[in-house]
Amino acid sequence: MAALTVGFDLDMTLVDSRPGIAAAFRALTAETGVHVDAEAAVARLGPPLRTEIARWFPPEQVDAAVRTYRELYPAYAITPAVALPGAAAAIDAVREGGGRVLVVTAKLGRLARLHLDHLGLVVDEVAGDLFAAEKATALRQHGATHYVGDHVADMVAAGAAEVPGIAVATGPCTAEELRAAGAAVVLDDLTGFPEALAGLTRLALGR
Image (cartoon, rainbow, N blue to C red; front, side, top):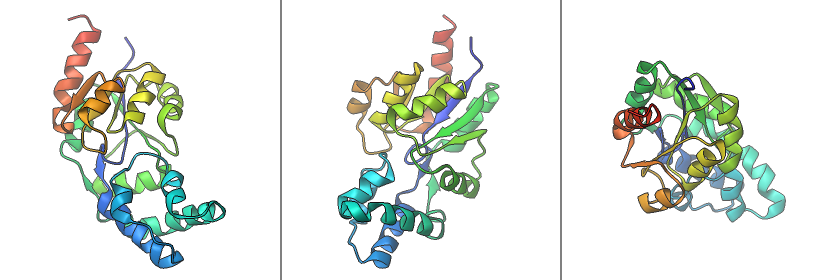
């Protein structure tokens, strides 16, 4: 059996980044003069930043808006973010099982690291700028045995990597949507993760 290595998504899986991301979008509006409905944007976190930016900016301005947003992000988005319930304990459960912890996210890796460092969430690897099936590349590269996420695209990633997807209904997707996307387990939040991981491990060992 492969050594335990658990990948986690970041936004709305480990971290409630909505207040900070909303603040960054409001700063983007102030900087560019282009209105972004920050509350609407944070209600659908998961897809790459470019997807959201393209809702508000004309095509020829998207690249510049993405760059500006990322320049603003450290000043506005990090401090307001909080760890979601059970996040630290979930990481601890992997460590206690002798495992490694990855974060595989659509966010740029350097920005993801700022969140993790600010909240004291210690992980072994961060792979950023990946979405849906693209995440499977990093999961396979790092030998992931499970992937945890809040979005149907995270369950697509787990399926593409051929590992169990553990879903948390803390993001924009419902439990029913996550199950339909192939989740092996759907949890209300990460407080149920240690028990779920133990159950999947027993299942894999045939116990």
